[in-house]
Image (cartoon, rainbow, N blue to C red; front, side, top):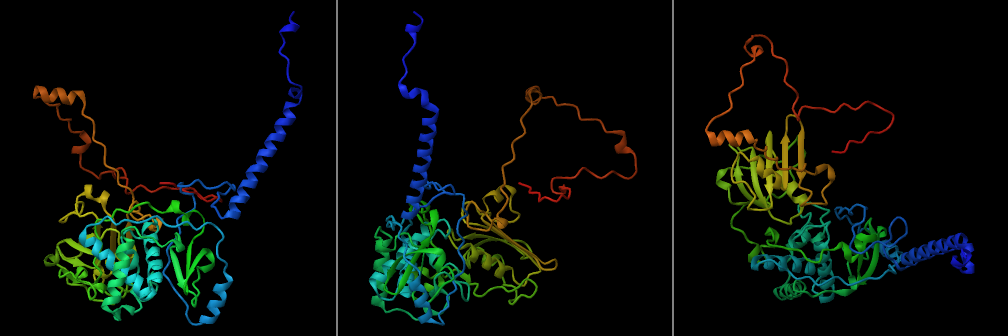
Length: 464
């Protein structure tokens, strides 16, 4: 009877462990084959060979944007070497349409900046201009670049060489395009800021002519050629559409003094100092101190407006152009402080958060965007960035996060004392306080405590 209650098993049940191993092995082989297939297709893969999930930022650091240095001394050799670099066989998806969100003045300035990049880089050629314009907008949407159109185009303009778009620092802007060519470029730029895209270059963020050979040519994916220009994107996840923002909210564009001759919207009668030229080394300033005083408050100085001057003229508060080039902020700060024995610049990009006077309240420091301090006698020079706002800044130059102090909770006795109008008795004075003699040192504050790490053969890492 008991035997009749047993459940009959299929014949393969007796070999289940062996079959399970076979299934696991088959699954592993399938995953490996999938990873190899994705690599052949050029899709980004993780360290284990699995495809990177779309939209998920990898652990690899963001690529750095180095100053552009080109060698044009051997054009024939450059063309030969460029021809040896194969085009990527991976998919080359088109960029998403971009729609500008700024106001009338911001849009006019953005159109001028984009048009300048297009005509000075590609000439009066509609195809080449649109290709260049697409790269500018791709950079605008990538986290490694500034977040205004003018900030992208004129990134590094203060350098004698090494700017991101060579026309902004090589003297090319001394030659003005014809009125007709300029209006054609502005028309193309306006179209791209309203959603027009140039598909062939995809998500390219770099390009160069085929008669120069940048050092980065072999480290990026070559995806397209437009006339004599070659277009590249970053390898891996940082070059895929997932790395680019769907939209960029722009409320203001900086005025570009170099464009004032082409467009009245870049003329600013309130510009007090253009800050041309670098400040030079800390120990030997190349410029005398700028005469910046309370009378300049509210006027433009370099990449922003002055909002406060400390008594004595050694401290400054500024509102910087939002989305500008962080390197330009640093150059401007060094120039403003040049020639001063000691100096500090505190800057915000949000006008509503910018303090209007010294001393600056502690509560305002949490929203600060950039700071610079120099003490010539001691050789101290330090600049810090709010890395939530400027994620591409070196980590060593990131400001410490400032958390608001928690309020001390009120005790029940405090509430009762308030209601009764009575107060707790003041504590009695200790006998030691009334005895003369040498006082013992106070307990160390947070600022004076130093960590003592015993020396070991292994490297010790302290995480703040």
